[in-house]
Length: 224
Ligand code: G5P
Image (cartoon, rainbow, N blue to C red; front, top):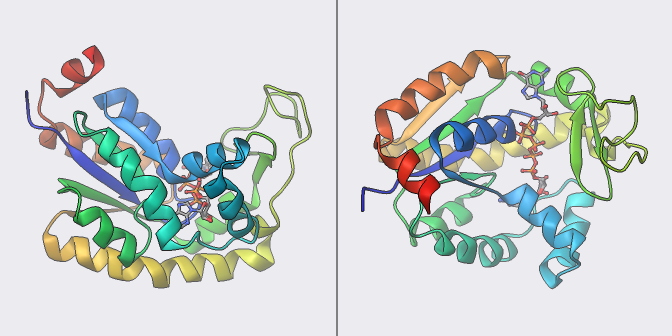
């Protein structure tokens, strides 16, 4: 079997982790595991962890480390035969250490997006509360304004994406992420990308991954 590839993408809320992860998954055949999506699935299914996580997410707070690691590590372990990209996990130093004890990462992509750009993007973010589907009124608007594409139900703006709450949330991200970024920098696997547009960052990430990912990986993984 060819060498497997393990990557993590880090970035503040609205930095484009999800958008870039989807492009990585479809271009390179990696499995994409998003902690935010996984939490939303658990909330929708009303699992024990989902019920617990819901209050934190509603308040724009981080879900506690022990809940996150208990949820995410088994999912990571299920992917031992695959190459993967983790999106949104780890977010804290404790989570990074827990992940470290189960696997070795090849690269960490860190998105460094200006605060003004994040504020502008999140200001335009609307969600469909029942499914967690996310829209951006400029970048990926719904087909009918204010309505979810699938259910036709109304979209809402999260309290946390309103300007007053945003700045505090983004500052908090920076404090929590710094030791995680420092850890991966010290390991020599951190690659930082800065710009205001995902479409301008993507070619750089794509060419980095082209040099790092074994050439037969895409086909091998798609076949499994
Ligand atoms: P999530 O789901 O991980 P966030 O807030 O970290 O949530 P989010 O908002 O999903 O991350 P993202 O994935 O970084 O952002 O970015 P994205 O979704 O691709 O893009 C954001 C928006 O900008 C989209 O509408 C997109 O279309 C648009 N966009 C992208 N690129 C561009 C561009 O170039 N230009 C423009 N104009 N727009 C663009 O986590 C949710 C919650 O779960 C909990 C936390 O409570 C978290 O708040 N959680 C955890 N808690 C503890 N530990 C963990 N590990 C946790 N993981 C999740």
